[in-house]
Length: 244
Image 1: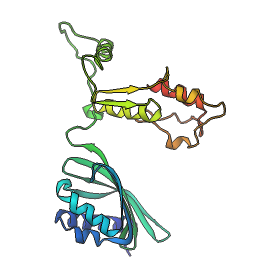
Image 2 (image 1 turned 45 degrees about the vertical axis):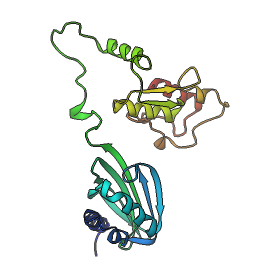
Image 3 (image 1 turned 45 degrees about the horizontal axis):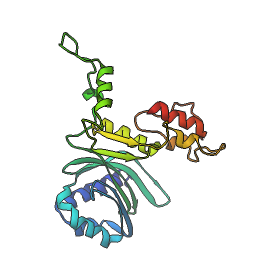
Image 4 (image 1 turned 90 degrees about the vertical axis):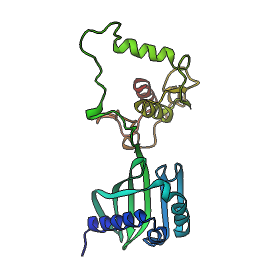
């Protein structure tokens, strides 16, 4: 009897082959009759859920040639419970790298999630590709980090226009702004309140986050391990201001 990892890996390998052959009929035949595919940008350049074999086939017929998906591989371990086998996986398209999640019933896919993680050629600079930060040696008119930061703030929106304007500087807008900055996309966030976090501070006294801390991390800077499970409004407001 095959292990959960072998089941998921086998399905991904067969699915990879069907997509490589541009055989949408064979690919759709690997899904259950009552199936769902949730795509976040990687195939559809949109946030879209397709339901049932007919909708999945229509999506593949429309997008498969342009998407050119490949390299579907299990990430980590798979598990099985209640007749469902699930696991995370990685894949690529012609222009991006992605991650996803799959649930199998028997040898067929019940639910499939595909998400774009990064565009090829526009990866975030991190780890070995991180910015050097300082140019050592003697350079005429060399600017410090603070001077470069001040110049960027003075130019953006005036002599240098943003590619993206985010309306609303709550936690969603702030997190998106951080992500775009890491991708070197010039971005301005417009917020009607005076300070980041005011959208939380100015609400009723007993307000707190209803989602536990594990679901509330912002990009790149997670909450410390002693952060309360449910964040009071003023505490999260101060965190957003510090983060910004």
